Length: 528
Image 1 (spheres, one colour):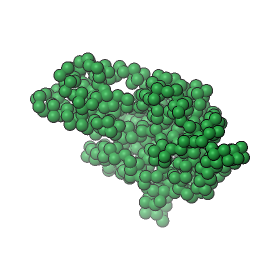
Image 2 (spheres, helix red, strand yellow):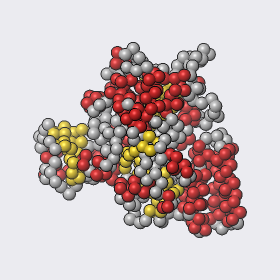
Image 3 (cartoon, helix red, strand yellow):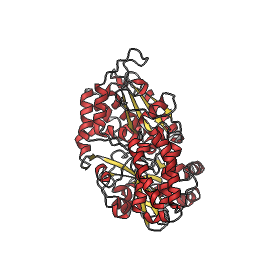
Image 4 (cartoon, helix red, strand yellow):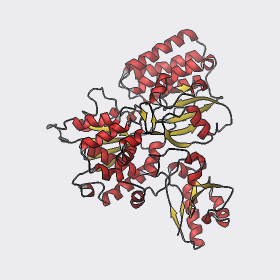
């Protein structure tokens, strides 16, 4: 039987993958073909989606981007034999854009049926869990420490230190209904502009995240996990719940997992549609059914987190890296990267770019090399002008900083942030004063409102930028903007207000000419 793969990833679906699958199924039935249609995840080559693959003796052959009206021609001209065609990209694994990556976390993405647990087993799935079940909690934590894994959500805090803190914390709390419990919370509230790696994990390889969360539970003594998933990810929600059901049926989740005498239960909680709920303490409030508002720290969530109990809060990519580390060893993971930035990161190319998608590489490649080797220039064909790395709170980087290695410390030295790995490209038609204003307005809209510098400071910031671009006492207002940014940076409770100055300052510093003419303001924060 021949296998044909059509992705069920959100990006592919938005480009017509369901229609392609339905059309292909009809053609298979009408022609009485011995073909199995597999709905896989995306390989991350979004510029080729929908990417249809055919299993052949030589390997899987890729065709893309495929439209429904292309199918009849493809079938007539040897699609099922992997024949040459104008849409043929050759052997999937030999496409340079994919072949030259260093895929550790995304090795199975697009390869397997995301909800077929046997498929996951056949591709080295659960090997990390089997290894962890033979270890003590401290031995598991020591492997995470040895790997050098840092939080992939943006803060880059060492995961091993966080896990050690939760392992050592006492869960005794006699006055609470959660007495003697610890929790694992996965932050899947992926809200940064230009990011989609968390979604890809959940839609292409959900068992990997489940495995990582179980291992985290074994490491710190937690028997309950929660995935806080952004409500705008309905496909991920559906796929992940299906994967949880299969894992429970197979005895991988629930009581006595894999006959080990250990327990771990997992539940998906949908987010409240607020960017601020990506901040870990705000997320915990929302998880508990409260309004998502930033908590004052200390106490840290590792000591007093979900429901007042010791809690590991990690991002999807952090937990998704754990199975490889436990399977291959912490030292194997630490072989990748540079300096204190060990392992790989999923760089997500977005914005005005010809070849958008996910590129997993070891830390250390420069921003320029990444974009030249994978980005293919701007979609508009115009010159790249500015690049924002690390989401809406990251700096706008001019060309002379594009040689900076993608490394947490190297980016911090130039006033940037690697963040979650989102990279948004702007061409030379973009007014950076308008982008600075958008950054302030974004804070206005998304602030939880708890602290005055963030709530009021961002509102005043929009007004000040408007006066600058209107040439209303420009120099005095530029000085006022600088002072306002200092207040936001040092007076805010969390990174929402504390990092909003990054894009604003960088726009003023590197693109001053744009503040000397009226700014073209984005229609709304929803559109930008």
